[in-house]
Image (cartoon, rainbow, N blue to C red; front, top):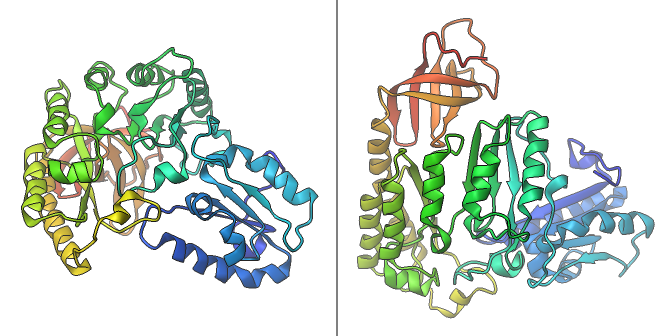
Length: 422
């Protein structure tokens, strides 16, 4: 880091422990304070502790009250100030009641540039292009912990993409809570135009993006995927529910029909674009009929995979005012029903690929099974075999013949004579 810090393998070796947090999942705050309590015994060794992220933003200085051994609290909208806060921490020995705090309110216009981001994957690089959220879904804490939507300039995004290529990255994933809500502060590019431009950076083989919000998803995104081979043929478009009434209660800002209209644009594309989504079951007031509407929407769309969740109340969210009368056991049952339906759909979607020759990026090898592990442009997991003695480099691109499928993965064989091995 700029301030001279370096990462060490264990907490015991560290002089400064930074605990990054997220408050989206259930009981997140309880888990954070339990972990901080575990760290308390290390205070006697002279270590300093910082809490970062959403729980830090949400709880603020109350963290100091609940965990007095914490020295620094930095909210998720204040990461850009972290280097200066660390200087304060070093130059002013922490005494009782003397601590460092960074908590911007949600209206900040400051955007966190990502040059401090750790690059833990040697071939897939991640670039945050927009922070925060203005959608205020009834169940979601993100708008309150990560601030309003703030986009980086297209020039800064392109500069970082070129830097990643120089570091050896061939796949780039553009990130944002609502990535397609991107608005270039310089006014030069729409989100679709940014996608196309990043894809033209020399050395980039694949470009992905996540997560999209249906309200801001336009035809131009599908058109640019069709026109740009380096853009991966995959869209993650969270729906959360198949019921218009539940979507309205969730404040999702679209109806079932409006969502399906966007799906029709994707399904009409020239390329075979895979579709993934997020679904919540057991939202307050959800009826059995409305669960069936979700199942019927899954059948209509034909998702390649979905991430499913049971509703759980989050602090400071509007849904707290709704009566959460659905028992947890019933939520679990509904979740199982949705997951079972998706297994059937996913299996059918994957069977279509049997016999196809697909380009994959190699991610590693499962030595126990003797299979290489890779991912297709459609973000599907591919487990494949190669002739004895063939060694593939992680991050290389090869052609694989699909010989079988499962609900969540494909299996295949390295194509003979593939000129992509390397």
